[in-house]
Length: 138
Image (tube, rainbow, N blue to C red; front, side, top):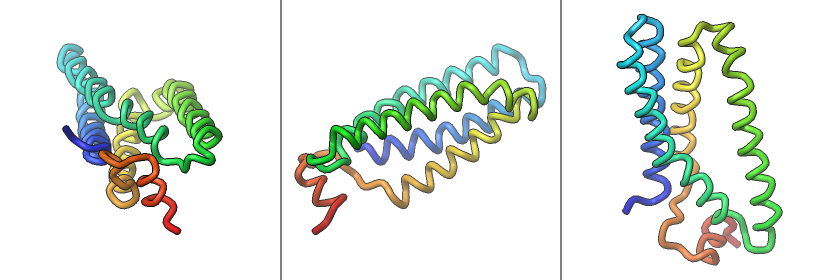
């Protein structure tokens, strides 16, 4: 079984590549069938990597003494991000063309890949107390 960090890296780079493909297909007027395949691949990539791992990490990375409050704030930020994504997509598509948002999302996912690579620590197999030591060394 893979750890959290490899799954996040796979999801971020996988989505970046898939969004580039989707943007290119939209830009070149590819068939709806071909486009649908890559959209479904992007959905599958997200739901098997970034989506579940995000929720697991939220429950693990905060120290016990602030876990409840910190998790609540993180979940609020996560749902706020979802709202912004859904709200801005039609605006971006109208402004940048139907393919434009996917170029933007590809860049965002690439930045996310670099962020995870440099900053996220593996939590798989560690107790909550061990993770507190990793994230909050004394």
